[in-house]
Length: 233
Image (cartoon, rainbow, N blue to C red; front, top):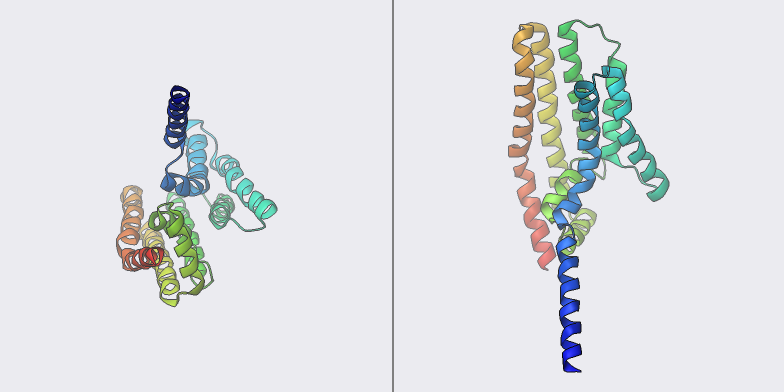
């Protein structure tokens, strides 16, 4: 009997170990929706545009399938709006509308900046609502997929004024960084040589992302401290 019990124990431990090994990392699981909502449409666009030689209009239209599906699924299944999917859908629709713009190189450069501006305004506008848009992007990094931190975030978002203030500040910082990048790119498109703006546009976009990441710590760090303290309470 003892041998059978030992064998069963070994088998149980092996099954448990395999289950743990196969379980996804909590942070990776938390970040998966962002990857689907943002990386999916972008990857589809560049694959269709650069890899398969599709027209800009066709690439934007087909890459909209990701956010359309996610938005409709959220409305039908959960009766909630998937805001990141809706944002990417909005960006694609704006891009489709702007494809009618003349093929002039300067206008094309300005058109790319307008898409960043659309995202910036959406983020800034969300800071005035109960659910700032950038909170969904920040949450996985602060909660790390831990149930205690997830619950702490929900409690703070529902009843902590300082936490809500930092939430809004985080979206304002990112929205402002992208809006400044948009303004700089539009101004540069019509004042600087086209050859200069071809590479400077990328530099400005990267600079806006770096600025948002660095300046955003002014809100992210206090929020992380509040989440950590609330989870430990």
